[in-house]
Every structure is written in structure tokens, then in C-alpha cells.
Amino acid sequence: MNKIVLIGDGPLKTRISGRKNFAEGVKTYHTATVVPCRLQLSMPTSSWQRTSDLKTAGALGHQAVALRVSGDRAVFYNVHIDGYQDTLYAHTYRQYYRDCSISGTIDFIFGDAVALFQNCKFVVRSQGPTKPNGNIVAEPALLQASSPHKVYLGRPWKQLSRTIIMQSNIDGFIAPEGWSPWAGNFALDTLYYAEYQNRGPGSDLKARVTWKGIQKLSPQMAESWTGGKLFGGDEWVKNSGVPYVPTMMQV
Image 1 (cartoon, rainbow, N blue to C red):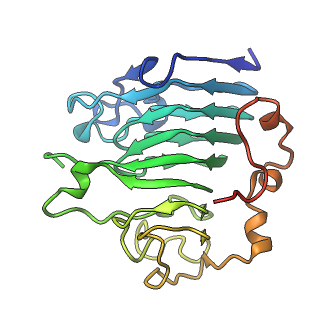
Image 2 (spheres, helix red, strand yellow; image 1 turned 30 degrees about the vertical axis):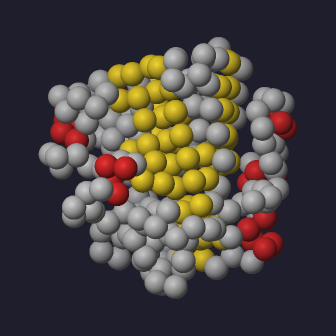
């Protein structure tokens, strides 16, 4: 079926959870709790999560995807996507997220999709005793840790990794260098990472890494990463009825 709409009673009431995980022999691709693969999907006000039980998809479960999106023109509004490692797999095609909350610890947003996040919150979780705009924050347990791990904005999973963070609030728990390598010099020349008009104590660019792939955006370049330009046609977003700004946001 195409053009599917799933409507919940809010992310605190409508919850879908799963327990498949890499540690139990399931490949990351197949661990997802929910997998929309069809054309034009709209999912407002619900929640997907991986249970925090270490026997299922917590620290010992390793990779455990809460949501893998493999369909084109997917819209998510007021959705909470919670997990530990590899929470949101933005697999392919065009995706739009608005007023969503996404949490995790390791690589918790990844994939090959053209994905735009507006007014979303990204929550970095603590690891536990065994182991383009939004609000990047840490859960209290991470901030209270006696020897907290370094937290980065991202790292290159593939050669042409691209991440642009614009007009977002970045809390001070982010490491000053901002970005982490994957392994050695892999993809440091071919990635495309940029930050533009961000705010908050973690947004200072003075100590950021200076890899060849780190970009300094002009206003014109930044505009090219907005929804009106990025999607190559955004009528599908407008027709969804979900709040959407096709240009730079007023912050």
C-alpha cells in the first residue's frame, strides 16, 4: 500500500517497542521495530523504542534499530524514537521530521537518506553501568557521570558522509573538536560536515577539527540545505499538513 497515515494518541500514550538486537545474532538492518518501506508515509504523534533491558536492546544488545525508514516522502511529526545504539536508520529516499525527539548513545542517527529535521530534539543518553535544526542535549545521567565519555556531533560511516547542522542549540557537553573520525583517516577528505548559525555553549567553532571535508558555509550555500532546495520538490511535505519551513528558520 502507498500513502499510509498512522496516527497515535501522543508519544507518551501510543508506544511500539521491540527486542531484536545484534547481540542475539540479528543483522542491524533486520533489528528495526518499525520499517516503513512504501511511498508517501505520514506518522504523527507516536513513539518507537527499544527496551532498556540489557537482555534485549540495551548496552549488551549493541545495534538495535527502533525505526528504519526505507520509503520515499516519509513525514514524522511529534514522534519519539528512543533506543541505545543505531536508534534511527534513515535508510533511503526523502524524509522529513518535525517536532520529534530522538535518543541514543552510539551512532543513533545514521543512513543514506536525504533527511531534514526541523525543531527536533536529539538526546544523548549515558552508556549505563555496563558499558539541519534542533536541540542537541544530554540526559541528566550523562551530565552527572563522574568520568563522562566524549560526545561528538557525528563521524563518517561511509566515504561520502554528509551532515549539516544549522540554526540549532548545542549544549556544552559536546567535545570542542565537534566531530570524530571513524577509523584513522577514513573519509576525512571526502565527507561533508558543516555548522551554520548555531547557538549554545557547544556551538563554538574555535577548537573544531580542520579536516579537508569540513565546510564553511556562505548564506547561499546554507540556503541550499533547506527543505525547499534539498528535497528537489517539497509539495509532498506541504500537503502533509505538518508544520514546515522551506527556507532558513527564524530563530
